[in-house]
Amino acid sequence: MTINLAAAAGNPGLNVSIFVGVVAITLFIVYRVSSRNTTTADYYAAGGAFSGMQNGIALSGDYLSAASFLGIAGAIAVYGYDGFLFSIGFLVAWLVPLLLVAERFRNTGRFTMGDVVSFRMRQRPVRAAAANATLVISFFYMLAQMAGAGGLVALLLDVHTKGGQALVICVVGAIMVLYVLIGGMKGTTWVQIVKAALLLVCVSLMSVFLLGKFGFDLGSLLGRAAENNALSGLVLEPGARYGKTETTKLDFVSLSLALVLGAAALPHVLMRFYTVPNAYQARRSAVWAIWTMVLFYLSTLVIGYGASALVGSDAIINAPGGENSAVPLLAFHIGGTVLLGLVSAIAFTTILAVVAGLTLTASASFAHDVYANVLKRGNPEPGSEIKVARLTAIVIGCLAVGGGILATGQNVAFLVALAFALAASANLPAILYTLFWRRFNTTGTLWSIYGGLASCLVLILFSPVVSGTPTSIIPGVDFAVFPLSNPGLVSIPLSFALGVAGTFVGERKGSGDPERRDEMDVRSVTGIGSG
Image 1 (cartoon, rainbow, N blue to C red):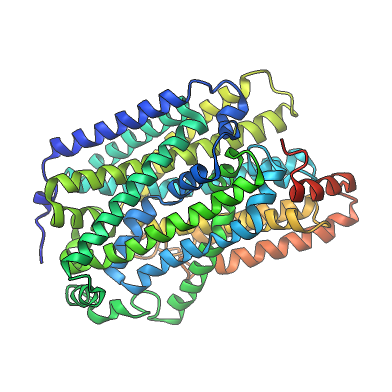
Image 2 (cartoon, rainbow, N blue to C red):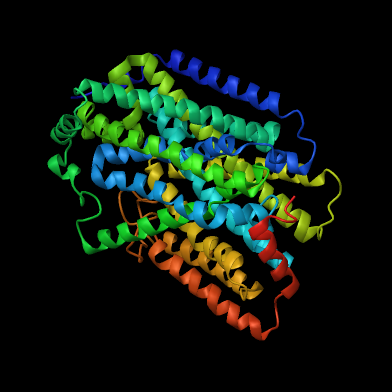
């Protein structure tokens, strides 16, 4: 079946009106709840005032980004089973923060990842390293959201020009900076809660409708999806995307490793554990987030195959935004212009909320770790830290807009997987070693963070993601010497190894603070002193 793309754009005036209405409502929420952003703790961590349930829903809102709503459903619609592997990886990844990270992380730090990894190390170099990693990871994650925003609005307004999509991305960037400047963590948390609720209602209703259309027979839906897909029956079994050659099989292993290990090291996810009053609520946050995402990712399976069945993979690939257009096109097919506008507005809110959270995390890391603790040696002038955080948010917003324009057209789930690889390479080894290995020291921390970050960035630069294929960010040239699209298979083990090697080298230099090690052991387990 073919959908007329001009028709799918529906009534641009109606779509823009829905967008403006959603943005106005969320900005009002941000303004109303942010009146008490007077202290650093209020701005960065909402004063630790959220319950485990509230924070868990907000966590799912932070995590269920444009990659989840647009990218994964699109990947399932085009590649079937292999697209659903993204959902499995994103969901299974939450076992690591639940079992290993959430409680200890909440007990040890106050605002950022740098608080934890520098707790018993030399403060200035370790905080600088943590801030650098946070900024790079947040930037890559933002690329995915901005690319999703460009593709989504391009479909709605039937914008085919690069200039038009660039303008859309600029508008998204301006609104997200407003969220951060006005609301801080409290405002963005409430936006995440509202957005997560809307998203779950939307995908649940669409799933029930699709199943009902096929008599609540999942087999019938899958059969129609195979008939209407260019890959035919291959979409119902492994290998449509990652099983063709040995390289693609290795790429799948690398992708899986990055997805499963990356969630526990994403800076904007880790920062959310500080918005609850104690470690028990931090663990409850992870549990609530997991069950919320179980419902969501099961729905993406139905929606993805439903898009293939009713819209067709060819129409999806040829639409503005490519794979990312599957959900909006499906919404237009089953509910016309009004449902298209509503679904797209929810997706748009998803993008805005996630990017706002990322911007807040990155700006907090720079202001708290670099400005307050490295440049000012822990004694910033009263109120100056929040001012620096807000200025940093503006700069980060501008950089994200530029990067999003370059990344337009890429599958957003795939771009997010690169951010997961960076997080698992740069942050996870340092976090786990800090929390669980007493001998770990400053040299090991620096080697692990910088080694993992640098190796991952270099491998991405010389991979097919950047050059060498028609879908690369720079398609006209070829300097791809690393064959895998996701570098996690190499960079993650290397970072763990560098942490061990640096620790033994650092021991000979006499680094380490035994008293701080003992304090951290007690504090991370019991929470004593974390208030």
